[in-house]
Length: 266
Image (cartoon, rainbow, N blue to C red; front, top):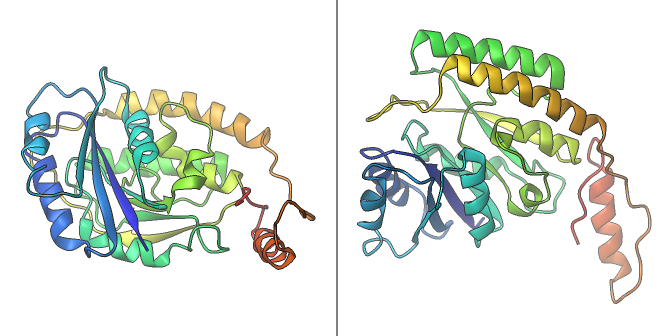
């Protein structure tokens, strides 16, 4: 399955170059279409660290925002620019392990099939400080209690999913934390698998426990409203305009097999 690896980065000097080089060394060449690094207006050496690798890796692409826009916006920029039908996202701090990419993609359904449209990583052994681990556990329990998306680790940055399905989702700041719930809302199945978690090599986290909590509460109200107000109807008949009936029947049979309907895969 052909994939684009999308890595948002903000002030990841000392991390991002190593991560890019490691990913090219691990992911099979015939699977990897490209790696896209989106620099969210860093003010350290992130720019030089990535652009110095462009001549060495022809499949590397560097994009830079003209103003700081947030992780979700950086992801969306990269996914819009991506050429492959499958996206794998990783955080730019090197804590996600590119060795997990193949396993995530293998569990993913082919785009448009009845298989999972998103496979998310679940960090088995968190390397973050104890306060961050406990904050993450509490946040996941609160979020799952409200959204009921059965996601054990929404904060894990490494995920594989269909590009087209992502681009049909409503965009908002911090949406990257709610991708499993949003994919389910739009009729897709999701799956999870254990992944490795590594210590940060350089720099500091861009988030604080208090900041995440305040934003998370605000976003939960919005996502809850969005899920309740979203309707994805099943298409039971769709013929004509040079669409073979057999193709249409196969397409909509796949839709009906999903739990809550599906996105239109024309």
